[in-house]
Amino acid sequence: MKPSSFEYVAPRSLDEAVDSLSRYGGAAKVLAGGQSLVPLMNLRLASPEVLVDINGLDELGRLQAWDGGLSVGALVRQSVLGGADLVRQRLPLLAEASALIGHPAIRHRGTVGGSLAHADPAAELPAAMLALEATFLARGPRGERSVPAAEFFSGYLTTTLEPDELLTEIHVPGVPPRTGNAFVEVARRSGDFAICGAAALVTLNASGRCDRVRIALCGVGTGPVRARRVEEALVGEVPGGSGLVDAAQRVVDEIDPPSDIHGSAAYRRKLAAVVVRRAVELAAQRAGA
Ligand SMILES: Cc1cc2nc3c(=O)[nH]c(=O)nc-3n(C[C@H](O)[C@H](O)[C@H](O)COP(=O)(O)OP(=O)(O)OC[C@H]3O[C@@H](n4cnc5c(N)ncnc54)[C@H](O)[C@@H]3O)c2cc1C
Image (cartoon, rainbow, N blue to C red; front, side, top):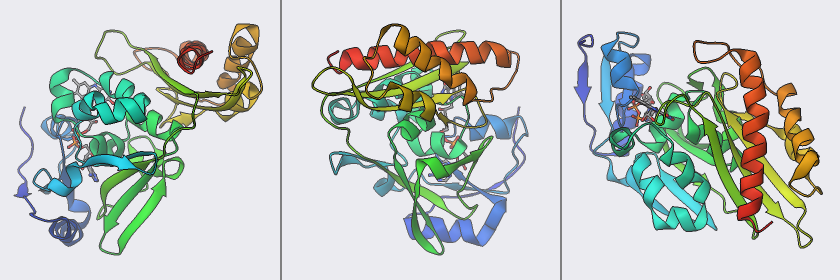
């Protein structure tokens, strides 16, 4: 299958990229790893008139320590995020989430920024970034602005980025001491998009009870969903046993999952409580419970 014809521009600087996007307005699309955009173009579900290829912008490919956490350039490949020692040491949740994306060939081309800007509700990185309370930096003709993850995802395959804005960098804060994390998902086959998945971060206090809990899910709504009621129910609790089962069950009131060929809404609700429980259990174990 072939895409509709399009113009191709390869800017040599961030300013040039922003200029191109603002010149062509909604007719242009950013090309990053191409792992979502190119299949959509080949199926003629997307027909941009212009592709603005950002692969030559080295400044968007930096992955570095930032304020106890990480600064991740939008062009950092998913395979790099999954394999870098710096990520495993500081924010292993991001490494674990990245390793669950598709297959190695997809992760070698696919970028962190592309996954976040594409905003597939079943994608792992949006849920992980929401749980980690990351901040997204966007650059457009009006300058730079920062958007908290909770305000970035606005609906099915939709974000609050304007058509002439580029996602440039993601600031992910560090986590407190005695924090464990886990990303648990259920997919039909290894490498498939998740039917439902959960990212969890659990911080334990000196007596082994939950001090701070962050949970976000994929596959259960029009975007990633934070499970705040489960988080609140777990604070002060020992992260196991029937207390955890009851707390995890609260997730069913926080989600409005879709029904599709992979599973009904009712099935996804049941699955959501299971993946939340498993993710919290594993995160707590890793925190030293
Ligand atoms: C077979 C297959 C299986 C997959 N399985 C999974 C999976 O299990 N989990 C998962 O999460 N993903 C999966 N994916 C998708 C993959 O992760 C993509 O890499 C990702 O969705 C998009 O990243 P990209 O860099 O390829 O972006 P592109 O395809 O280049 O772009 C995607 C969209 O984001 C926009 N965009 C990209 N970068 C920017 C930017 N910096 N600023 C503004 N807009 C931008 C583009 O204009 C486009 O609209 C799969 C893909 C395939 C083909």
